[in-house]
Structure formats: structure tokens, C-alpha cells
Amino acid sequence: MLRVDLSKRLGEFSIEACFASEGRVTGLFGASGAGKTSLVNMIAGLLRPDRGIIAIDGETLDDTTSQTHVPVHRRRIGYVFQDARLFPHLDVRQNLDYGRRMNHLAENSAQHTRVTDLLDIGGLLDRRPGKLSGGERQRVALGRALLSQPRLLLLDEPLGSLDEERKEEILPYLVRLRDEAGIPMVYVSHDASEMRQLATQIVMLQRGRVTAFGGAEVLPAAPARA
Amino acid sequence: MFELSPTEWTAILLSLRVATVATLVATPLGIAVAWLLARREFWGKSIADAVIHLPLVLPPVVTGYLLLLTFGKRGLVGAWLAEHLGIVFAFRWTGAALACGIMSFPLLVRPIRLSIEAVDRRLEQAAGTLGAAPWQVFLTVTLPLALPGVLAGMVLGFAKAIGEFGATITFVSNIPGETQTISSAIYSLIQTPDGDTAALRLVVVSILIAMAALVASEWFARRALQRLHGN
Image (cartoon, rainbow over all chains, first blue to last red; front, top):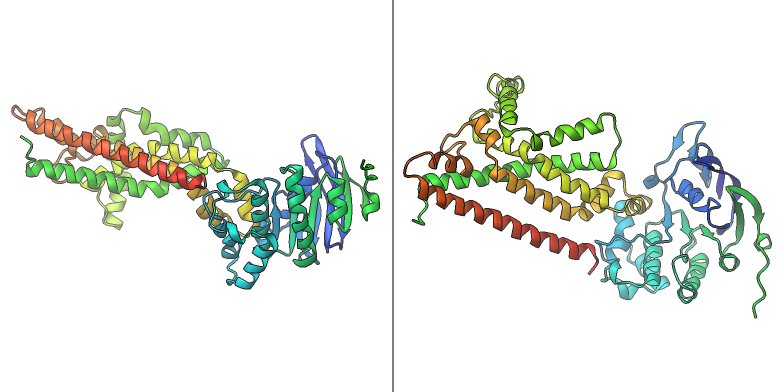
């Protein structure tokens, strides 16, 4: 369970968010500029809230009253960025292995195979990120985050930089991930149809405030398709 | 005419040793300083930056004299080091290395700093979310990505160290076999009546060393770039 109750000022803009989600996939839904990325950065530990609490499964990660702030590398929260952020000096295999090495985890070839199969990236292992397509890069970024064995996975508009065709290519992998990987996720998007396909609980964010919380019914009605 | 005399060989080998030691000792320090200047805000940062660049703009003889005052036998630091650790810089080749290291430091630091500033901080953040502690992020992401700058800084520093003259001769004098580098040997030779050909030989050697350093740096930089751009 993810519990967030915080406020943060960023220049003229402020975020005040309070929600608790049990969902397998918590969707953070809102227009760009609604504060989604800042909120996710705070959950990841890349940004510190001015006031409030962030807790996962009862473990406090941030609590401003007791000055608690677990540093980003000790949170065990995976993060898939919109721009993938693969390490350009490492090949795909080394990128995938990075989290395991940093966390001093034992090699687990069964898990490695499961993840590479799930994401269909077994054939890319010897390539450099510079030689991958946008969709491939995003799949490798997903695999890299999964293999660091996080307890929560943050996905910040992972399809945002892809064209429609590529989005359709990645979405099924995300659905498989939700159903098979067993890791709770926070999925950030401004796209209602992605939310409908993936999220089990939705937090609607508008101008830094939570304006609705619940199932798919909080989403704006789907436009009628011709 | 092209035969190098033992004295000339001694000067060449000493220059190489002095410049190599100066570069190897200064590099880790230079990386640390470059990282601090590129990635940290602290009180007195602009003063620290100015002090590091001082040897570039001060007359070398002034730097040499300041070294003599601090690291000489009766100098504040020099006396302490000699008494407690048995390290003597005055009139030793180690003093030449110290002078060269300080003179070349700004040239070493600058490219490293620029290349660290150019490393995408979002990659460092990503490494953090994958469980890398800050020092691991530095060793596995920042430093490898800044490698071309580190190599450029090392080559530039080495080239400066091997050509250093003013501060070295002021601080450790011009003692054959101990502190007489190529530069100070050339200086001595052109002051002696029949030293011209010997001086010319050393000039050719300096040019060859400089050329080799430049070619090596180009080669390293190209290899590093290939690595970085994921081919």
C-alpha cells in the first residue's frame, strides 16, 4: 500500500496531495503541468516534500515531522522515465544488470530469463542503447527497473515519447507486467485510454491538487470512436 | 649530430619521470576538484576556483618562489614534512614534480570539469533509483561518461608539465641528474658557447614528445567517443 500526504512548493506552483492506494496499478492522471512528475519524483526520493508523509507498506520513506528521508538509492523503488535514460556507455545486458550489481543481489538467471522473455528483449542484449529504437529502449528501461527487484515501480509517461504505433506495441507488455510481475505500480499519464487499459485505481490530479480518486469512472468519458 | 649524450638522456628521462609522476598524482585530485566545482555549491567556491587558476596567470617565477617559501627546507610545510615524514622537495626531482603538478593543475582540471558538467544528471538520477549510492553513481556513470575529458585533461597537464620551466628552476634550481629537465637543459646549453647542436637535439626531442602526446590524446578521445555513443 502506498500512502501519500504531502505538500511542496515549486516556485509559483504548489502541490498538495493526499491519497492512499491499494491498487496493483495506481494511475496518476492529469494534464501536463498538473504536478504528476514532481509527485512521482517525491515518491522516488529525487525531490523532498516541504511537509508530509510518504509511506509504502507501513514503512515511512519521508516524514517531515521526524526529519525522516530515506535516500533514493535505499528506497528500492524502480523508476521508468519517459526518456528511458539507459546508460549509453553500457550495452543492454550491462544496463539490465546494473541494479542487481548496485544492490549486491545474487545472480538469478531464471528471473533474468523471465524478464527478458516477458519484454521480448533477449535478442537485444549485446546492443548499445544508441542502436535501439524508441520502443526497444523503453522495454529495456522497464526490464532494467524490474531486475533491480523493486517493491514499487514508478512509470512516468513511459509511452509519452513514442508515436501511436509504438504505443500499441508497448501497451501489451505493460498489461503483462501488471498481471505477471507481481510488483505494484504507479502509472503516470495524461492519456485516459492508457489509464483505462492499465490502472486499477486512479488518482486525478489538477493543478497540484487531487480532485478525484477511484476507479475508471473518474476518467473523462471516452470520445466516441468513428 | 643525432647521437644523444648521457647528460641529454638523463634530462629527457627525468622530464618524462617528473611529468608522469606530476600527472598521475594530480589526476585523482583534479577529478575530485573538478567534481566539486561542477556539482557542488559551497561557500568560497569562486575563491577556490580563482586559487586553482592562479598558476595560469601568475608569473611562473612567482609560483616557484612561493613554493620555495612554503615547501623549501625552512618553509612552513617543507620543514614539517622533512621532520615528520622525511619528504624533501627542495632541490630534488620530487620538487620538480610538485612544481609541474601545480603549474599544470588548472589545465588538467578544466576539461575534466567541463566534461563532468556535460554528463546528463538524469542518468545519475536513474542510477540512484536503481540502488546506486552517490559514490557508485560517480564511479559507474559520471566518471566513465566524463572519461574523454579526463584523458584530455591528463594529456594537457602532461604537456604543460613536461614543458614547465620558470617555477621549476626557481624552486629546485637546475641540477643535472636531479632537477635538470629538458627545458632547463636547453636553457643551460644555449648559454654555453658550443651548446647549440645539443640544444637543437633536445628541441627535436621535445617536439616529438609533444606530438606523441597529441596523437595519443586524439586516439583516446576517439575511442572514448565511440564507446559513449553506443556503437
